[in-house]
Amino acid sequence: MILPEISGPKRVSKYPFRGGGSHPWRGITLLTYLASMKLGMHDGWSFGRPLSASTVVEISRRILGKQMHIRMNIGVTLLLAVVSFAITSSNALASQTLDRINATGTLVVATDPAWPPFSWRDANGAWFGFDVDVGTEMAKRLGLKASFSDPAWDQLVAGNWNGAADVCVCSMTPTAERAKNLDFPAVYYWAPVNLAVNKSNTTAMLPGDLSGKRIGVLVPSTYELYLRRIPMDVEGMPPVQYKIDNPAIVGYEAESEVFDAMTSGTDIDAMIGYLPVLMDEISKGRPLRVIGSPLFYVSNAIAVEKGDPEFSKEIGRVTEEMLGDGTIRDISMKWFQFDFSRTQ
Image 1: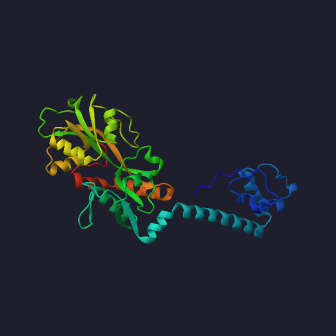
Image 2 (image 1 turned 180 degrees about the horizontal axis):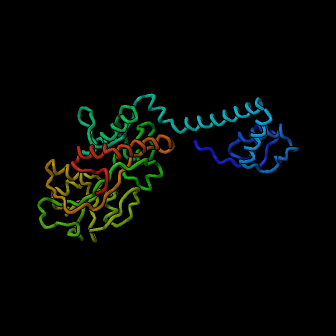
Image 3 (image 1 turned 135 degrees about the horizontal axis):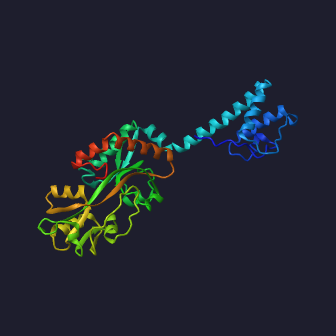
């Protein structure tokens, strides 16, 4: 806790033990009151005017110089007690989540149960994926065990978790709109977003080759904003260069629908998606081909509910530590054979 600069109360109250001064550090009122009892007006001090920090120090020196040890000790003791209580109370309020998870020994991590290779749950209830490994390591560094949950996405972005999670490691894009309801302690990876066509298309080689063509995207999404050239307002996102002119946007409510349409090769000419997801679908037999370099990199952040700045700060510290020592890089290489812990 950083105490405010002491400029002295504007006026010592007639009842200083009620904290009558106007300065936020009310203990100074008590100190100056004790000083005035000994020094009095004949010492040249007027307590009807504001007191500077140097004045308070001088008062204290004179008190000690006149051997007012007992009275001063009482004042200092009471002052320290007030400050100590304020610090303790502030920390208790700010660290409710830390207190709770340390008591239970568990960090509840929200993530997606069906979005490989980032996160998924198998038939036996076991969790796997990039986000799962990140959440597990985060809990470990906090001295905790990770437990995974899958609240509805709408609930997560609304910030109304109701105990369903302590932290969201779920590839959430930190938009300004979401920041109204959530805190984003740190960005933990930057996902390249690419264009893909059906494998049978042998003519499209660059994103610009799809200008004026039908492009399928999940709506709403950053993909749609990109095609419409609408600013994405995403924290930590590198500048965007637009490479496709006048696309015919075909919207879908689920990403699986976009993949199905692209597989058929009749409804759309191309699609946009996270490169890791595109590559995972290709490895499973999807007849797709990624073309060109990434259209843009979108940042993905750890999310926590608002209202616990101390917990948010600790999650941010752990995340930055994992980025700094290469842990997230190693997890990325494990799942994607590519380092998404930084923009390329």
